[in-house]
Picture 1 (cartoon, helix red, strand yellow):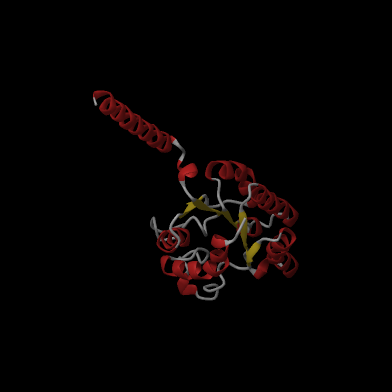
Picture 2 (picture 1 turned 90 degrees about the horizontal axis):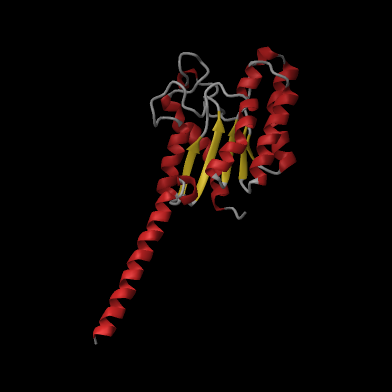
Length: 220
């Protein structure tokens, strides 16, 4: 009887020890490794919520929606105000390695256009980001932009066409123009007339959502 009781106790102790070790290992794993699914947003000030309070930007609103409607998904916002496609191309490998995303949203290029940078350089940088993301087994959404017409019709038209061309060449999802629902509404922008205000952010989310949502359920 004593031997039987002791054997049971030893077995129970082993189960407890095994559970404790498993829990400890889980807690030691990087957050990215523990998350089930990640949407990585690589953008500029339009996605970094420039001039807004924390939590007001469309990317943060997207994270809230995913937590409510798609449990197991999270958003990592790797957007930086002033970022160009060159900066994104330089950072993409590190972001992919750190966060292991299932979906990558690329919202870069506006600052290239506003600075009049060569479009072939922007094309190469965007292509680099798309190909690196796909090589990491992530689905990609390319978000395009327009720039003011004072840059000349040839440059502005080629700039906008760039995003669709890259998406078509690499078979990615594409949203042609992030600011489409608010572009003609001055009341939707901060005093600089460049960055959307807090009231405009939900409209941007609703604009992005139809392009992004199917990617959450897509098979790899």
